Image 1 (cartoon, rainbow, N blue to C red):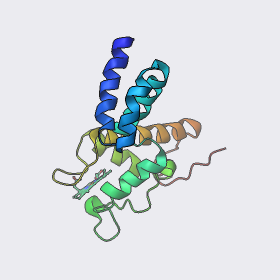
Image 2 (tube, rainbow, N blue to C red):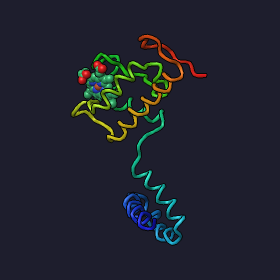
Image 3 (cartoon, rainbow, N blue to C red):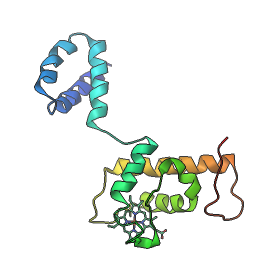
Image 4 (tube, rainbow, N blue to C red):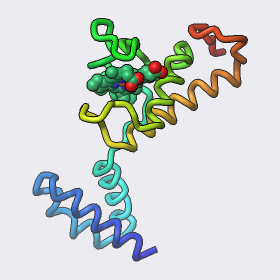
Length: 153
Ligand code: HEC
């Protein structure tokens, strides 16, 4: 337990090195009491390694990394993701499924294009899967009606 905390503290020192100096100076004091140190470690670890997980943050990821090619004007791959809302992915389940396939295969964004951290893309694929799987479970999609709206009770 102590070892794990020590390893995490090292990580937090690295994370804190980019913080304002007063935070760094406060650290030795915080380390004197281990529960406090633990909470600081947890807080700074999540700052150091930020994976967007909220649907709103993932929608921004799509806007930033996908819409530059997938918009009404450029229509790369015959696909516009303008206005694509991760939260509402079930309303565009066919598109979401195509996105998941490309993301899982590591093919989007294409080589050479700006891309977020790999785990951000995994988070996007997993969240899309959960949303459309959840919607499919609640309301079975009959046949192949791509833009069927799924009402949530
Ligand atoms: C630099 C331009 C560019 C960016 C950025 C980009 N794409 Fe693409 N995308 C393409 C092109 C070109 C194609 C068509 C060729 C292909 O399918 O590989 C395509 C095809 C696709 C397809 C269609 C595949 C199919 O089923 O036919 C999907 C889905 C897709 N992209 C998703 C994404 C997602 C999600 C992102 C952001 C994470 C993204 N793309 C970012 C250029 C881009």
